[in-house]
Length: 385
Image 1 (tube, rainbow, N blue to C red):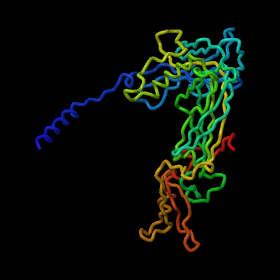
Image 2 (cartoon, rainbow, N blue to C red):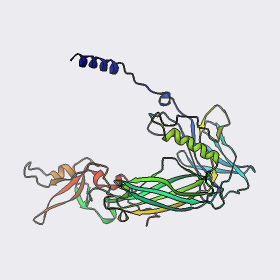
Image 3 (cartoon, helix red, strand yellow):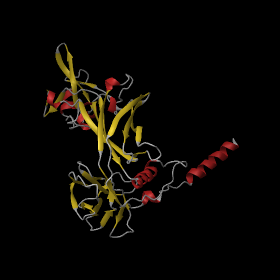
Image 4 (tube, one colour):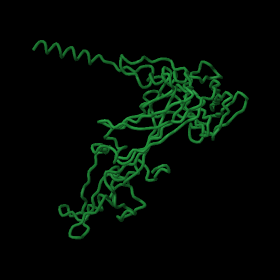
């Protein structure tokens, strides 16, 4: 009994004296410029994204708008980029001469100049193939590539996923004014398309190999229970050949952003890129601008080609309730109360209830369970097949 008493006192002291600790990284104001993208030397567009670092507690990044961005050659030739969306600056294919060097110039709206180092054009070889391995809990997407000239050696990849998915219930009707009408085929909201982009850093190197060959390099893993695999899934992978310095930058960034959390992980370190503040060298900037062309390849994965236990789990709790035109218990018109007069966007007429060949009501469910357009689009992508 006495031991228990002392233990309670000890726990009270420990928990009572605990104070919240916010590391400097969380409470710092942020505001450093972040530069993302490559100078595309081939026949694709060059896309540069500018943003500002924020506190770790912030929910959204801060886009750097109204900047002047250009690509400059060592022959003093400039190519201007236009802001196509907040913080995103784009220009068409440059088809750069590999005999010259190129860099990026940035003038922010407060007239601060940033500039990357001159970089040589790095040629990216085509992707040989993309495949997947079926595992007990999902599929592992992998990539094969090689460079016959043995000059790539360092690689970075990113990807965009697209998938077809279904709402939990098929909404056969919709509400307009005070009427419930059958939903036309061209207004179906049962199956949609959604997409996502990679957020992790994917790197590969053949520097220690005799031949410049990458075999089954992991790209991403898709769980068997993922909604992405319930119908058809597609992934577009982009490949970039980069320099050793760029590879070291991305490796360091990966360690700082993806491999922290335990005492066995790499410790945070300074991330030095090839972009500098010319107006004030003391101002930090994050990013590395490579000059290379992008190679891409797409594959499709149909659910029919996967094991039967690969079954997507709907991400929301859903149920249907019967709603009667005349409720014999309450003597009320539940259809009017719970569907027609309901607040917009809270109830969706899912299907009819028929008794003795007569319509007596509707099944209803929440919109997130019957309207796939709340999470995607019914417009089929142009590349879909």
